[in-house]
Image 1: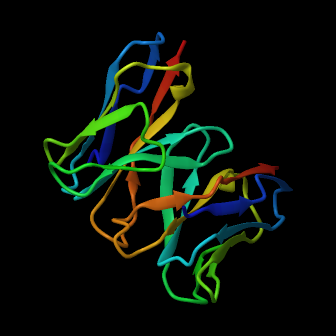
Image 2: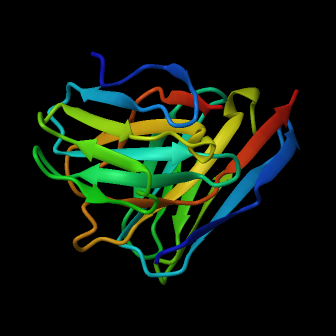
Length: 112
Length: 113
């Protein structure tokens, strides 16, 4: 029972490079979320999706794009990476309102 | 926008001592959730509080939701080394929030044996 799987687990990028983080869930959850976690700041919502084909901006969306072409997958893209985007990125999924969120193991991203 | 403040940021205790972390929201919440993140791990759901004044217990952990549904606390009795980690509260504004959570900054708990 995989739950929420994030790939890759680690990545080092140079400023200006692009990359895509993949989140896959096998629980048939409707809602999916991308967060970034920085020291002393908790988790901040980047983008979220309430269903296949839908996306919306969260608290800190600038510099990121997302897509949810399939219900089970939620992709987070960085078009032109900046050092300020060095962080740990977590994906989460949720069955519906008032339910717990299930998190992946995270992607540790460093941008030089 | 909604803000959730959590204190303290750090707490160091001796094994066997009690521990409490407090959470305060700038707006009234529909519900509040608590998560635990072990060092190097990911957040794991602990509990959800929905009702005003609600108190829930999980073994040595006691969770409270304030009467005004704007604050909450987590109390651990007689801490153990297995309690080490970061504890987050996360507020859900409800309505059309689509389950979006606003997380507090977290309290990092270390337990000295």
